[in-house]
Length: 220
Length: 283
Image (cartoon, rainbow over all chains, first blue to last red; front, side, top):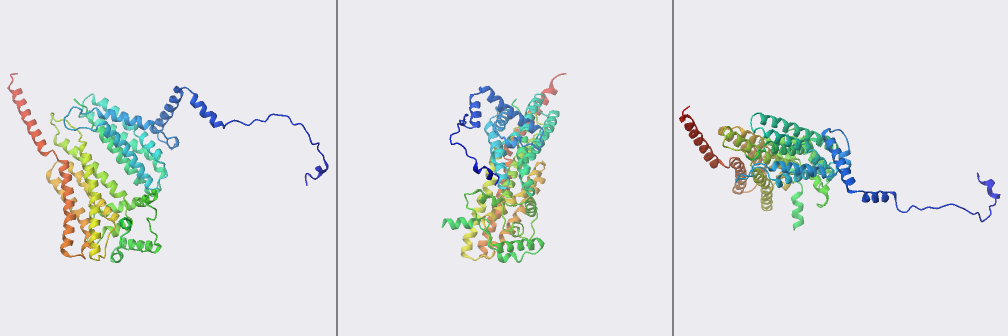
């Protein structure tokens, strides 16, 4: 009855209406995709590199951040894995018997180990997705890669005695850092009474990689 | 038919009579839970085998359960059946898989360490980490943990069709027992770092006795209703395969014994030769 008083108002039939009617062609997100296709390659690469670099920083200072989990990528793990495998390969290449792990063996151990640990945590009821877990495990190899670089530098000054103790301390510290960092990201996605069951395989994985780094001896 | 065989491979054991004879609080708790589950009569593995949830039922354990099972496998006691006391119709694949993985890496690492300590102080020896040990150990241990339970399960099913046994185990429970019984080898292999032969032999014999007795205590109730010759034959086969595994591990760690003695003797000879040459020179 608000409009009851209007019932006797008459409006003439033809009232000219002026104006513009615009229907937007395409959605705004299509516009954005168009722009990333058009941008120079340098911008794309720099943006990806910045994302990878930001994740490295998150691993070095593991806090409860979701950047590693939300925007996962596998560029960082691939880079770290290839670097580590190349550096581990240079040892005992001249011996007739088989010696240290070859490039393919290191590669297979890292990726196969990551897949097995991810499957394990998902079978135990974890809520993390497959590639997010691979991303976290791969990025957390970074302290061990840094330790490998340090070990190679220390090995230039001799193999045994003081250099061995230094290498032992460096590898132990970096392997604990790796385990602690990946646990900080992974343990939240598990039911509380199974956390130790998920953390132990991660510990074993980084322990084996740390062992390969510690026992690396360059060819004479 | 194939589908019934597949079904029997993964269903629970049918040991209703045995449950009542378990003494002790743990045994009572297990039997009560077993009866409760029977009351619910929920088939745990009802999801079809191509879904992920089906395999999740094999990992339905908690931290304290795994810890109890490992501790129970380290301390066998006559009268306490490992399967009924600890597994309680909830066999898991987590324990066997990760215990085997740990054992493989511990064998490789301790083999390297013991070689290194053997050669400590020899300047001619160059330390090489033997990576082949890992692949050989992994193949041996994982095939032992998979194939021997399969063979044993097949054998028990065949005997069960001939002679009605009170106790029978499902395939997963046998895999569980074998997997957890390997847990006692891990500290034994770590003790191999100590370079004394007496310590090494002592540790392997103790480990063999403990894990062998777990297997014997578990499988004796399943075969004792059979003819005595068949029962003794099955138990002997179980123990013999276990001894084979233990000595296979030992040989794998010290595989180059002959080769290492030759290298050692050669190193000593060259050292004495260099000594004579050095002292023979006029100062």
